Image 1 (tube, helix red, strand yellow):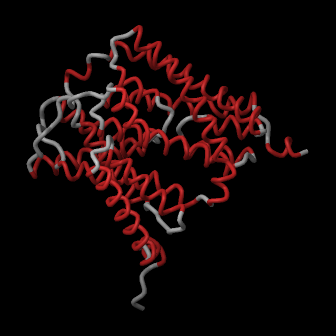
Image 2 (tube, one colour):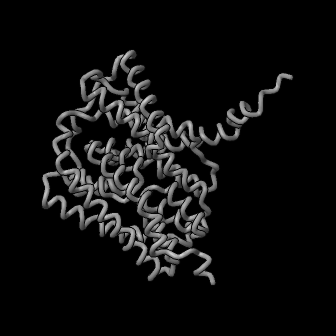
Image 3 (cartoon, one colour):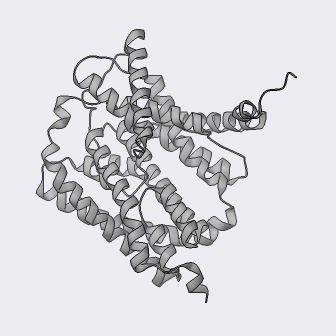
Length: 361
């Protein structure tokens, strides 16, 4: 008589799920704080990602449930939007050119990585093309299942690319001395309680609208759009407290690292060379386009590097936040590539790939 309805009972997380989530976030926070203490670039996100990834590979049942993921993405979007100012719109005229070059770079990266995986590691065409497609991991995974491709191998290559980029990109920018020396105009003070309520409410509302419209990465981009508009017109001067931005960065790092919880160590070992090799091919191709753009336009090198990095959209935008890189430029390019990969990859696989069962015959 006092039992909850089945639908309500399903909505309540189990004790094990709560403990696993708590463990994930604690390990991520410890890793992020350790890297921050060591003064490493991008310390919060990189430290959290590496700590959670190591623990996941060691067999810990780590997880980040959807409600936590959505919360982190909204916080990240709000923080990115608070970076927006009139000064950051100065490179808008260069967007059509650089986005067109990004599309070309994506095609070259897909075919280059695919060629490497087929020739060096003997992969079938369909699996190779899907593994070489940067970003849009969920769509790529569903397409791999539909086409009978090697889902485990594709997951290893895709995950390794994101992990390496997220860990190495901040260090590379710092070593080369091309990271911005100072952050752009950013809300240094926290918004008032009333402003924070309005900011969060507007961000969630915009995210829900974009989600209803089936817009990609709706939670993050909806919050970023609302926050950008409110800060851009001067309706809100302050932003989220610094510690909340830190929580968002740790959450993104933990989310990336938790991908290894679904991966067997034997599977990782068997495909690690393919992952490293295809990553190297993708980086070389991206570097060629980055060099061409920096030599022919006035866009900052650090902005172009992060915008053209073949990594996950949420991870690269989180790096843009922590490295003080133009979020409008990076966001526009990663969103464009996400849409391009989502639309173009099925066609590329259909024209140039081959179902797994045909390879096995």
